[in-house]
Length: 484
Image (cartoon, rainbow, N blue to C red; front, side, top):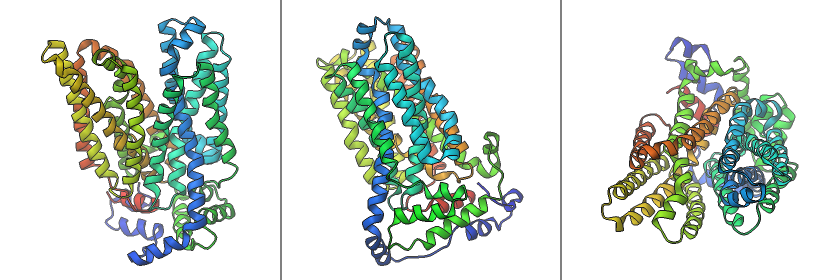
């Protein structure tokens, strides 16, 4: 993302012209860094953690929306007399709402702010849940599902962006990963509770995270970077002070952000076609590419077919489904812990490699099942393949693309680029969900070999293209992207 004429001219001096106004270089010894952090940890860490907790309540809400359809199918179809096709529409139509939310998320988030976008999403989700709760037929049921889907689409973009913009650089990766952790927790919680309570009760439970998010937004500051972008200088400094602590020295961070915003003011407002200019192309390629590999690696296909695999392979499919849902939470938490220690790229390497192995094991299992070879090993390979696949996705490929997406785009195109990336993600989700049954009817093991090929390409993509963003400010990351 070049931000001056030197990039257009291919001038060798562009590194100096970019980095000098954007970043005030300062080397800090390890002792000094620990000392500074220990002085600032009190109120600053509390407010950052509180703000992150409030924001990821939106991620938990996202998870409850995603997980709602799995445990409620028999209850809703019996109570409302729905056919299988009508329920399938209900289950999948949320993705359509999410794609619309993705298209509008960037503009809305830039226009009314990060907190405003989260507040609006909560209202849509509450309206959707209530429509589902009071449904007497398929129309209101689908309308409610579209509303919750729209809220999901916006939340899937704004939450990681907000967390990345408020977090100090040494905590940003781990805190941003909480977005994926809470999505997984929401899915698992909804699935488990849904086996106990009625579907209408589950809709009321789904509303609770929305109220926590709405109330919590009154207690936390807006993103300082967004406030600076829209020219609210007083509010910007107050928000940054509130996040970093009353005794913290914020002069350097304030200068960096102001210089960066001032440089961006000379650029025209980005439109969708502007993303394909040379100065933005690398960032867009990284963000979109990671989302393509995340979705087309087959995650929604595996989740969609999970219960069927368990049904024909094991005697207690419900128990194994619960184990699967519970497994995601600690492994995603492990990814959050490792994010700022191991770095983004190592997690992506491990994750994509594990996905490749999981797909190969599942393909082998299906091949043996189809050709009736060593049938006693089919359940074992299927279980190991699924657990390997889910564990690998949870530790890296599930969360890291969202973290990197929130880091690599400069703030002047973050809204537009974020909409594109989120749309690609939801479109990929829909494509895999829609085509999975057709692929499985063509060839069950061939389907997972295709997914294995995609995950093999993901390993190459990470090795050749994806930058490491660990331990750098957002301004430093974007300056380095310019020089790539």
